[in-house]
Image 1: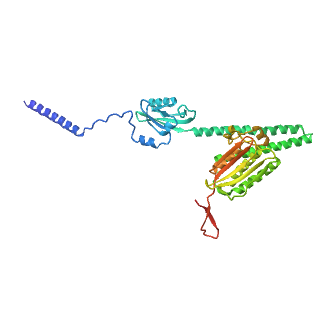
Image 2: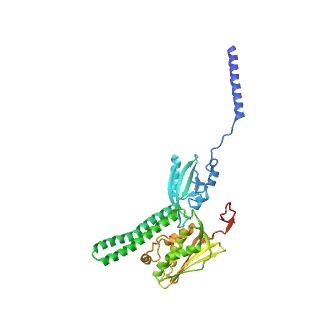
Amino acid sequence: MQASVVAAALLGLVVGCLVALAVRRDDVRVDPVPPPGPGDLPAGVPELLAVLGGPAVVLDVSDAAVRASPAAHAVGLVRRGAVTDPDVLAAVRAVRADGEVREVDVDLRVPAGGTARRALSVRVAPLGPLHVVVLGSDRTEARRLEQVRRDFVVNVGHELKTPVGAMSVLAEAMADAADDPEAVRRFSARMGVEARRLAVLVHDVVELSRLQDGEPLAAAARVDVDSVVAEAVDRCSTTAGSRGIALETGPDTGAQVVGDAELLTTAVRNLVDNAIRYSDAGTRVAVGVRVDEAADAVEVSVSDQGIGIAPADRERIFERFYRVDPARSRQTGGTGLGLSIVKHVVAGHGGEVQLWSQEGQGSTFTLRVPQAPPRRPVRADADTELEEFSG
């Protein structure tokens, strides 16, 4: 009897504990959180993608693009909700399989069906358990510059071969003609011509490299444009006189720009020298300065009565080593870098080069550079008068 009473008491105690536990569980019960769906991104990811400047795409488990930046559409990385490049897709699936970050370089056509292409360096990484992120870096401009540098080196090497080879041949000829003073003088004179051509080429290569890689306007100052034109014309006067070409300049204008006087003189001299090279004896080359008040710019125009430039050549005339008439340029000692230097000098001064030409009638190159702001006096602490730019 006592045993049954004890058993009943124990059973009641157990039941009471279970009820109490059940009540407590009901009090703290939390509804289960459903697993994330394929379109749900981790917190903060949409905001992060919104501020990325480059191409960015987030793919779900079915390789569908659930997020894509405007740049991703612009470069052709994603179209119609899917990644277009098979190499990128292969990288995405490999990352999803092992979780390892992948990098791949791709060449995309932009736009669809077009001929322009964009070079991208793409990095693919896992983004949580269900997504993969594709981040692209546009390398098109870097690749273009790299190609330009390679072409430049090749062209320089090719151009150097001509004077160096000629000097080597002339040296051998002089050695063989040691007993003929007249031949020695003739060969030595020719060697002098080739040496000067080599010196000009090296100078132009160095100048162009400095313009491309350096900061030529780090110490910019007011420049009197009339003085620049006078100096450039003076440097070319001997060459023009030897070829029977008249150099003419217009009246002084008092125009001023902010920049590097020596670089601007080089640009104008190159234009005048180029006009002389492509003009015939008995013609003239005119250099004029004009202030365009409406555009707040100064124009320097160099006009010739030479052979002119064909329409097909005008778009390439400022390329390195490009020559309208290669035979004539080599005969007159041109390096093919003069107009390229002009373009870079003017661009460094915030300006542009314009060209008008008609075959058989001549050409006019016009440099347009922003005009210097007017001077205004400022108060000086000493007796020295100071001036500063207003604007």
